[in-house]
Length: 273
Image (cartoon, rainbow, N blue to C red):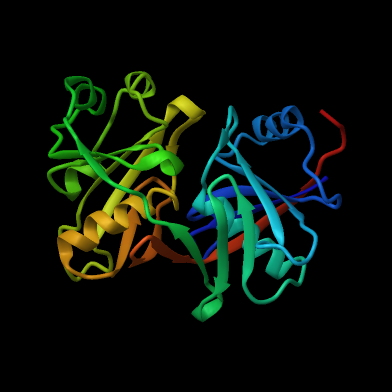
């Protein structure tokens, strides 16, 4: 099993969000236990498994994603990483269509060797802010939203960019909240800073204390900030230690996410879990 480590949503090595990509030779997935064992051994926020599908269907590739502890319904950075590997290492050209738990997701070439992902827009529903949420985050909450089944996170708006960057949440308490994870966000302090909003993502309940750059979160961030700022095309900056930018374009029920990816490592699994 050949494993490629890819830094997604970054145009340089050691930036963005690392994901592992396994392109399977067989036209089937290993057992779930095997995929979970591999993902746990790699201990990245996501490991993507992909295999070819028979021609003539809605998608050419099947794709699944695993954190170190569980399978997830949607992952942006590992989809970007998988598309990057198929293009650069497997020589696949044109639009890539993936059959996933979130339906058919596409990746298509963009300018400057970037890739654009076509994902479903998260349906936001404003919810009351529980006292436990503010206490877990350690910061006052302005508004909160549920993000639908595919994303499954709580989206929380904080008062400003400084609050997002300086956040030091109680991760054990965050892990007890009734959602996969928590996205925190605020508008950019400076309109000329190169991005329109900032965010961070915490997912201790699924084995991801803080995710460096979360593509799926931007399917919820895009409709929030597009409505607020009055523009369909925006740039988000995820202010983790590694950091990374995601260009978003809201198209109704679909959201386009654009970014770069860089392969930094290849390894081979020598044993069968």
